[in-house]
Every structure is written in structure tokens, then in C-alpha cells.
Length: 100
Image 1 (tube, helix red, strand yellow):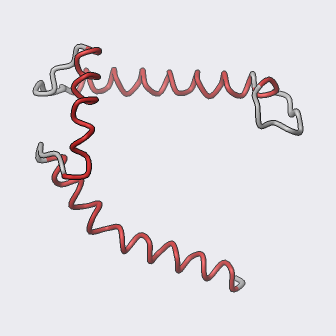
Image 2 (cartoon, rainbow, N blue to C red):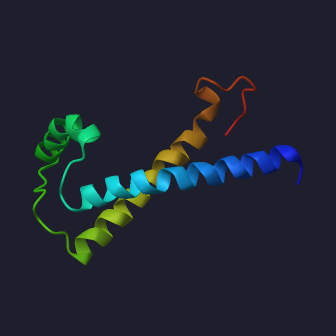
Image 3 (tube, one colour):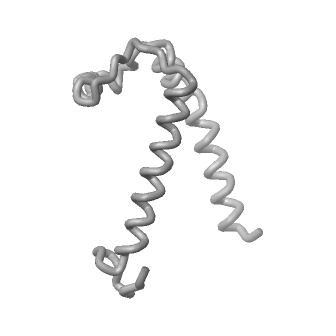
């Protein structure tokens, strides 16, 4: 391991340790149902998304609904990335013109 790798590992560990407490506090507030200060401006967007999709934020999700949502989101993600791979030669930022 050279010096550059060691410095990067130390920087990564320091960043993880520095972010543990604030991110944990933020996640605890969100899971309790409170909206932490920095994210309060997102509340109108969240309500709009709930209204558009017809979701009741107070309603609990059972395991069948969760499994259905997880499987569909995985399938949609798979198809999205497959499409990107198939059309990558037409996309910008491909200076080498690599094919699918």
C-alpha cells in the first residue's frame, strides 16, 4: 500500500466518523415523524408527490405491498440501466463512441 492509498483510506475513515453523529440524528428525526430543520423546505414537494401518486403517508405498508414495491422498483431499475447500456453509443459524453 503506497502513501496515496493510505491517505485516501484515512480520509475516508475520518469522513465516516465525522458524519456518523449528524446523519444518525437526522435519520432518527425522520423515522420519528419529525422533519429536521434543513429539510423543512422539502415538505411541499413531498406532499405534492404523495398527492400525485395517491399515497396516504399515515397508512402502514404490509409485507405483501412492500415486496410488490421492491420487486417492481428493481425491475424498473434493471430495465432503465439495460436501456442505457443498449443506447450508450447515441448518448453524449461518449467520446470514444463505444458501442453497446
